[in-house]
Image 1 (cartoon, rainbow, N blue to C red):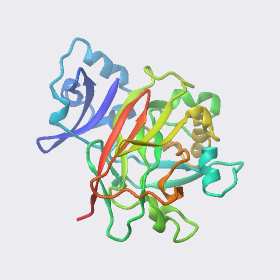
Image 2 (cartoon, rainbow, N blue to C red; image 1 turned 180 degrees about the vertical axis):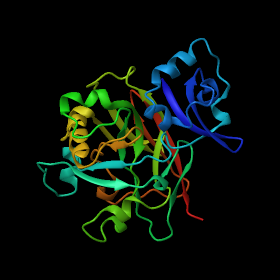
Image 3 (cartoon, one colour; image 1 turned 60 degrees about the vertical axis):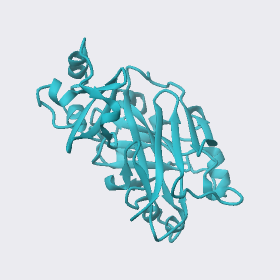
Image 4 (cartoon, one colour; image 1 turned 120 degrees about the vertical axis):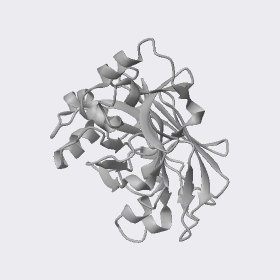
Length: 283
């Protein structure tokens, strides 16, 4: 299934994308689940699949505003420096343990929405990443058991305000400006992407390819990342792990390439789809 969170006629909802349209799962499931995160928390993906059987779309996909796949996750764990080429271009060393930082929910926008450049900086950079959405809660999850806890995958643009990221040794400020990251367009459930599937990740800025990698190139695997962060705190349904960006970020190019108003940035994961956002100044 391709599952989305959306807004239509001023009302937030969630649904499944089929044949270029959206089935309103809130209505199809008679209001039993408030949103996509609640559906995951209730372990109700099977219920959703049953509701979709022989059901036509309720409205066209282009009639809704797509929200971040999970609009308000309890936790957004982001893995930094997780591809060798990116480690090298930042003049750092590979670490034995994964590097993590946290993002906040309102630093995100959905597919088709504008990522906003703050007036405090012009150094707005892209970072293509694969997002993992948790379905089954767990604490201290063993690497061998990780796949039982994943609900699905999405595309993520870990947009970064680079000079603010470098103000101190802590990356948080540059990673959490309002509406600087993209998350979408949808979550593809794990029945469509089996465990250990090799996925290809690409960034295009105004049609020009800027980044390309596969999950085989990760330093710390998805299994390792989930085992690590679930040791720190329990993972809950709807939590998101953003798994790292490959080399080719704008900050490390000569000259640097910063996203600017009017640009179009696309993050593609071959087994998921394309997350597309325009860039606009923060009014």
